[in-house]
Amino acid sequence: MTTLLLVRKHPGAVAGLLTTAGLAWWWTVRRMAGMDAAPGSDLGTLGWFTTSWIVMMMAMMLPSFAPTVASYVTFSRGRRPVRWLPFACGYLLVWGIAGLVAYGAFALGKALLSSDLGWHAGGRWVSGGLIAAAAAYELIPLKRACLARCRGQLGDRKALSHQAPSEALAMGARSGGWCIGCSWALMVALFALGVMSLTWMALIAALVALQKVGPWPRGARITTAVVLATLAAGILAAPDQVPGLVVPASGGIHPMGTMG
View 1 (tube, one colour):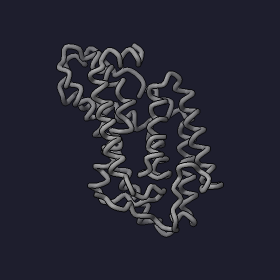
View 2 (spheres, one colour):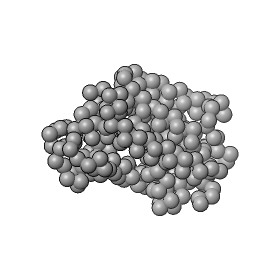
View 3 (tube, one colour):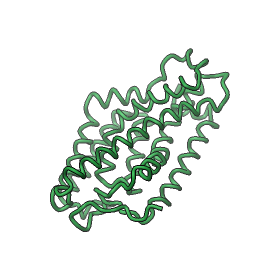
View 4 (cartoon, helix red, strand yellow):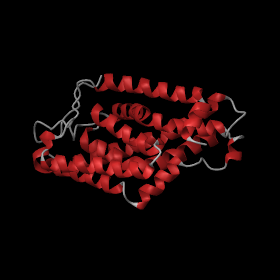
């Protein structure tokens, strides 16, 4: 069944996810207002970042996850409509864990390399190198395999008709795991570009959607690789000329500003 048919078959579930994503975007825009969107911006406290990260993932990932939920509802017929919620929660739970890992990696890098990560020292090269590596990941077999699973079927369709909520949660977590395998490099690129930048959030979300629900996954991967490689080259050669990039004003890691 095609993506369009799945979406049209279950407008309620899809509308619920898209509405949630829209509210998450609204919240994120308000939350990020006035914050430092430059590469290397401090992530704030763990609690603040975790909340912000989960809402960001709802905004960025739920639109492209909607067809998967529609597929889940299709093959779990006879169940109450809200039973897809544990499936979606499992998906978001895995992304929340990924955010904790990202926070820890950022904190470790800051502790070990803070003096070397100034934009006019090594920071610019770190950002450009990470984005270039993310571009290369788009072209390797592992990425292709993860994307195929992320776009593929949910598994045993018969088993879906009598799943317990805990099983739906676990299945959603597995789906989220494949999605992380597909998109983790894009999230690394987001950190390298400025994780609090609405511009880069929107770009990464668009690339994720293009890959997950677009008709030509191979073309989407190549397009993503070209976009990321172009950004990496721009940051290394002429960062002031990269549209949307907030170049740090000084050599150090910058605070996020007001966190209320």
